[in-house]
Length: 527
Image (cartoon, rainbow, N blue to C red; front, side, top):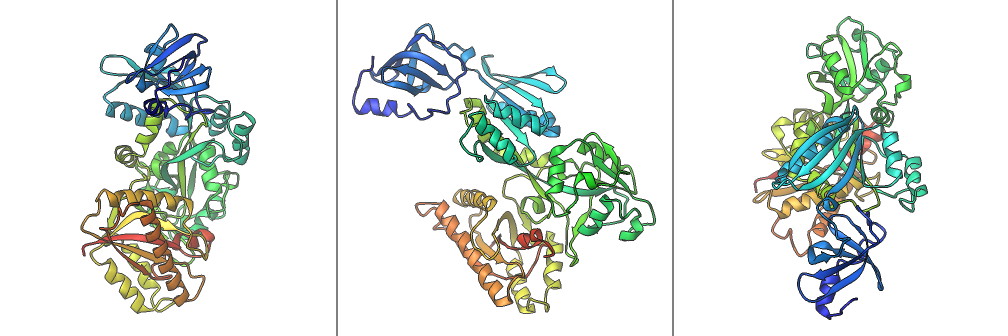
C-alpha cells in the first residue's frame, strides 16, 4: 500500500530506482516488509528482494523500488538484521598488491573510521579481514586473495562484489568476457581507477660506479648482446642479469615500454627470483649485477638513470615518475564491477584517493596521485638539459627567460600532456585538471602566482613551437576554470607562457620521448 503525500513523498522517494540494474543484493527473501518513512506518514509495502547494507530493493505494485535505508524504518519478518548489514566483498590482486598493499590500505581505512580489524588466514594465498565497530558490531567482511591477473579478470567476469587490483590495462579479450557474462554491454564495460604510479627500473648495487645507461645499451644487456660492463662505460667485469619470473603484469609493462624488449628475449643466462623485491635484494648484494625491477620494489638497490641517444637522461624518483618525466612508467589500477558495491567498499574506493592513502602509498615506495612540489634547486638535470639546447634550436635568450621564471619557484608534479600537433588534453591530464583545480579552490597555493608553462617537441620550427606551447598552456587555463564553476578561481593569479622545445626532458628518438616533452608544467612562485 502506497500513501501519496505530495512533495514530502517526492523528497523521500528521490533515492528510489536510482540503481536499477546495478543493485547487488546481499540477501534475498520473498517475504513482506513495510518501510515506513522516519519523517511523515509515507510507507511502502512489498516483497523484499534485497538489501546491501544501505539500500532496500522492494517489489511493489508500482514495480521494483530502491529505497535509501537511512530514511525509513523496516518492519516484518524479512527485515534485515545486523549480519545482513555487513558489507561483504572480495579484493583480488597479484604479487605484492594482493599480499601487502591492499590489506594495508584496507586496514588503514578501517582504522580511520574508528573500526577494528581481525585478520584470518583462509589459505596460503588468501585472508579474511573482519571489520567491527567499537560495540563489536560487524561492519564488513573482506576476502583478500592473491591471484594472477588473468585469473582475477576471469573471476571479475563471473560477477559479484569483486575489486581487482592489476598492474596493467585489461586486454580486449578480458573486457569482452565481461560482456559475455552479462556484466556490461561493450568492451569498455566495467570501471577502473588509477591506484598508484610505478616505473620499470634498471637497478644495480650501491657500490656499482655507473650512474646511467642508454636505453639502447640496457636493451642490449637484457638480450645478452652486451655481457661486460666495460662496453657501457663501467668496470671490466661480467654483467649478471636478474629478472623476476612468472610476473605477467611486469612482463606486460616491459613489453609495452620503449625498450622494445619482451621477457622472451631476455638472455637465458639471467638469474631469476620469485618476486620483484627478491630481484632487488639479489642485485643489491652483487656489485656487478643488473636487475630489472619496479620503483616500488627498489629497496636497497640503486636505480640507474636512463639516457636517450641525444645524451639527456632522467633519474627515476617519485616526482619524475608521477609527473611523467621518466620514460618507463606504468600504472597500478583498481578494476570494479558494473554492479553496485557495498557501502564499505565504495567508501574505501573514495579513501584510496584521499591524502592519507596517497601519503601511505608514497611511504611504501609508489608514485602517488597527490600533487607535490619540487624546488628548482633540486632540478639540476633539468637546468643542464635546458642550457645544452641553447644556440642549437633554442636561442640563448629564450633559455635565459625560462631561467628567470624558474628562479625562486617550485614545480608542481601535476603535468599536462597532449597529442601531436594538438592542444587537446589526454586522459591522465584531464584527471590532473580536477586535482589541481580542487587544490587551488582549497587555497593550497594561496598568495602564489600560478605559472602555466608550455613546452613542445621539436617537430616544427622554433617560432611555431613557442606559439603552440603557449596555446597549450592557455588550454590548460581554460580547463582549470571550467573545472571550478561559479568563479571558484577568480582570486587565483595565473600567468601563461610558452617556451617551445626549450628544457627537453627526454631525447626525441622515440614517440615516448616526444610525448614527454609535449607538456604544460605548473610552477608556483611568490608574486
